[in-house]
Image 1 (tube, rainbow, N blue to C red):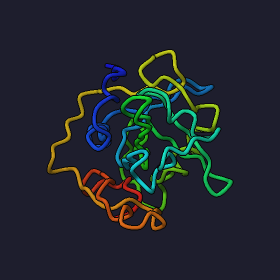
Image 2: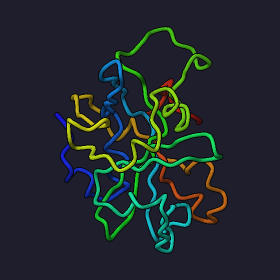
Image 3: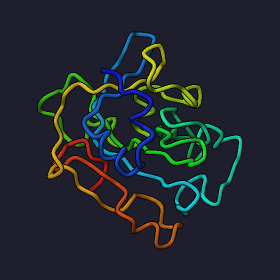
Image 4: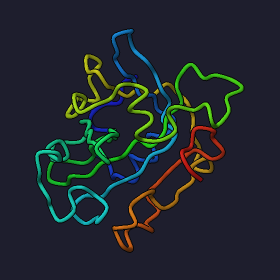
Length: 192
């Protein structure tokens, strides 16, 4: 079942946790590729110094953050890596969830950490060819090049590990907020 747009209107930290185990569907030239979401980070808008919309900053890059929840927000970091986010809440509350790691489906056995290509936000975008052309897409539409489904993969609260976000030391105290979530002991987690 495709997640409805309303799913993304909930509290961003709840959406970040609820996305764990859901399936990202990526339309490519070779068809639909699927990946289970393993790790996320929540970014809480104008009150969050780590968020691109902190203090209501509006730029060409952040335009999609000011759409209603359920849209994609893709941006480039370090001039070379793209990052995929899902906009949450409403256009008055520009918040998002960063997709940090996914597991390609169908799952493969006997993988080693060094063989992984989707255990980081830049790595997963590179692997699936996600670029700025994927910015602003409607994640609740099956016709979209990106959409998210619930395929009855059960995740219990005990399986979800909350911790500080990665790479946001510039955000002061907000860098310590436990807004990163990942599935306990999962091979595809980007960092412990």
